[in-house]
Amino acid sequence: MSPRYRSLNSFLKERFGERVYRVSVDAGFTCPNRDGSKGTGGCAYCNESGSRAAYVEPEFTVAEQLRRGKEIVSRIYGAGKFITYFQPYSNTYAPVEQLERLYREALAVPDIAGIAIGTRPDTLNAETAELLAGLAKESLVILELGAQSMKDGVLRGIGRGHSADDTLRAFELVRGRGIHLAAHLIFGLPGENSDETIDGVTALSHAGADGFKFHHLYIERGTRMEAAYRAGGISLLTLDEYIGLLGRALDILPPDAVIHRLFGQSSAEMLVAPEWTLDKPRNMRALEEYLDTHGITQGRNYQK
Image 1 (cartoon, rainbow, N blue to C red):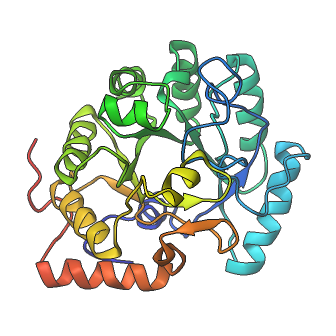
Image 2 (cartoon, one colour):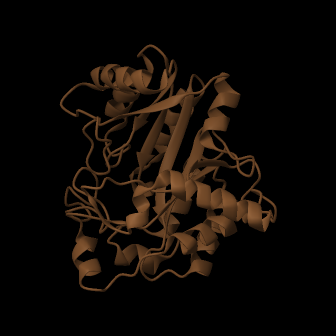
Image 3 (tube, rainbow, N blue to C red):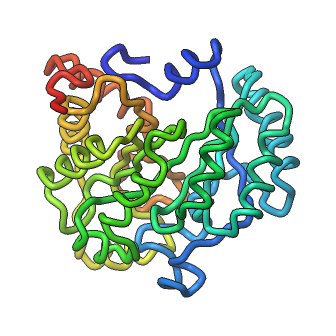
């Protein structure tokens, strides 16, 4: 655990007094980019499973998925406390009554300390924000909003179907209501240079993000980006380039922001490129060395 940034693990240990592990579930949601309301086939980088964890069995109820997932995670890590991670697709994209039933089903499972909800900013409304604020009075609620970029031209290029203003409006709905608000950004998207990427980090920091989830653009099989990449239409960040961007981002973030993720993950079967994506331990060592060499500590040059 690096002393140079505030990790999600350290945040959870501060809150609960022990290591807490996430267990992913698939609650049967879809996405505006898949059901035809804004598009079909998903965003250009998204695989068919919506980035579902490999162990998830969506044919079971949320409670049963948690029971099975907890067994796996406990066996590997000796875990005793868990966060339910509503992961694939858009997990606020349903009527509020259905959302409350599913979230409460997850929170009722023994040893569940809270919920983390991955979603799009354009699927959040006032009713859902009110529900989440109410749940946050009882348990930890992490809302992971997929901004991906704060540049509208980039969002159009990846077929995202929402704007940067949609992201800011979603922030306004939930900010200051006891919900831990995490912003998800992808570095290296086509049409976005490094300065624009860092501008996006700054914008979301000033908008009130409590945490950040970063990863680099990688290409997976079966995505719309795969064909463009193979045709030479997309260039990807090198490991050194990505680590340099992470260093710049950490340098300007609020010192108390929680870093949820620093590297994206794929499998050897799904990954097309870049190959360095697969070696997370090496990537983490390279980042630590970079931060040490350059004397970068989270928030060193943060400006309100």
